[in-house]
Amino acid sequence: MQFGEAKKYILGKLKNELPRYLSYHSVEHVKDVFDSCKSIAASEGVKGDDLKLLLTAALFHDAGFLKGPKEHEKKSCQIAKKNLPLYGYNAEQIKKICGMIMATKVPQQPQNHLEEIICDADLDYLGRDDFFTIGDKLFAELSVYGILSTEDEWNRLQVRFLESHHYFTKTAIKLRQKRKDKHLKLVKSKIGKNT
Image 1 (tube, rainbow, N blue to C red):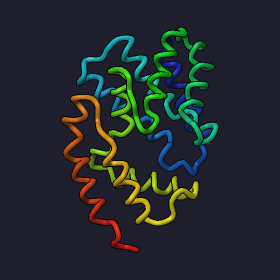
Image 2 (cartoon, rainbow, N blue to C red; image 1 turned 90 degrees about the horizontal axis):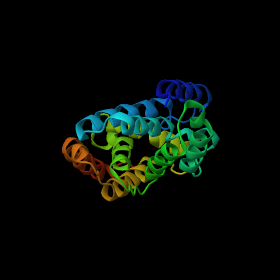
Image 3 (tube, helix red, strand yellow; image 1 turned 120 degrees about the vertical axis):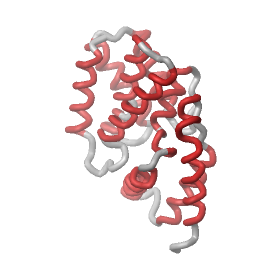
Image 4 (tube, helix red, strand yellow; image 1 turned 45 degrees about the vertical axis):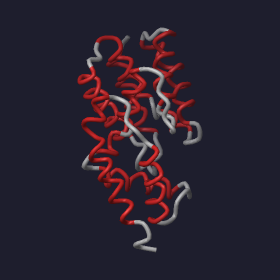
C-alpha cells in the first residue's frame, strides 16, 4: 500500500475540485476526521495495516461530494475502488475501506472496530469545543441546498440528531460524551428564542 501517495492524490483532488459552497464537507473536514481517526486509533490500540486502511478510509470517506451530495458514501466507494488499486491496495483491503466509508452513513451502523472508530471520528466535533463553529458551517451548507432556512429549524434538527447519536468506542465515550450532552442542553435552550 502506497499510503502516502494515495493521501497526496486524494487531498489534492478534494482541495482543487470540491465545490466552494461546501463549507462543512470540505478538505478541512476530511483532515479533521483523519486526525481524529489517528488519535482514537492510537488510544484503541490500532496499528499496522489496519491503521493504514482506517486512515485511507478517512481520506476517501467524503470524496463522493466531488460528484454531488446524494448517496455520497456510495460515490466515495466508487472513487476508492477506481483509484486505490493504482496505489497497491488489493481487493480485500478496498472492501474493508468501503465498509468503513459506508459505516459513516447516518444513522451510523458500524459492524466492526475500525468502522466504529471512523464513525466516532466523523462526528468527533459533537463533543468538542469547536462544536458551534463547525455546526455553523454545516448549517450554511444545508441552507445552500435549501434543506433549512431558519436557525430554529437548524436547532431542532441538531437536537434530534444529538439525541439519536451515540459514540461507539471507549475512547470517544470517555473524551466526548459529557461535552456532547452539554451541547445538547445548550441547543435545546435556544429553540424558540429567535422565531
